Image 1 (cartoon, rainbow, N blue to C red):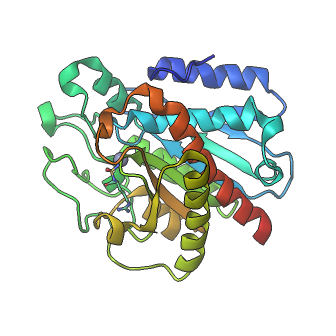
Image 2: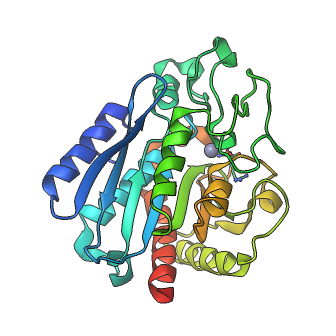
Length: 303
Ligand code: 0X9
Ligand code: ZN
């Protein structure tokens, strides 16, 4: 069991997933979708609705090493979907969930290894010093190499040697590709800034169905505002933040054909930034839950 009062190391996070699979055998299954550069497992937990033709939502976190709150938030959501399943709104019980709480275990562990490494962002692909690692959120194969990326190894936004060159990226892309068209929601959790962002991110362009994406994002943001008292801004990635190509969200939308694709930037708005204290995990977990709920409702309504 996990406490949600602290950030947990990868081993403990995996232990929690094992515990859930053991305890809720009838609807929870675990799978390893690949291994990281340093050989850590990329664990996926599937939470099944039990309905044969259910739509599914993909949820991931921890793609950026220093954004500790992201994987903690995803685990908090997983807890709501399993241990507190009886309390879920009906719509949320009617979709399946594929969840990878920790996409970048090597980077995460590195950011725990010494204080000076706390702000590590990339994975741990071979290299030396800061010239090691690839920004996994610049490594995906849609518009790879475009705006907001670098081909300089030492950069924090190094895009890697080629599209999906990294085992972590490849694992996610392969899996989502395999589950097409079942997966109709894609949520990737990051920090910080309090944004609910939708594609495209590679440039200031909007997908044809952007009004649906804006509407569902607005519903989530409004509920977060009402229940949690904090504001999340909803909009297109490149317009609200900056253009950055080769990110997971654009890939999911373009190649995965996932309609409701969002990048969620959790709390805060900059006071603590990446080093947000663990006392905020529960609050962020609830914020994230509302985004999942809004997407689940949209899927159940339109199916
Ligand atoms: O730059 C990123 O990868 C994300 N922000 S973060 O501060 N967590 O690093 C934003 C990604 C938004 N999506 C796209 N630009 N496609
Ligand atoms: Zn991030």
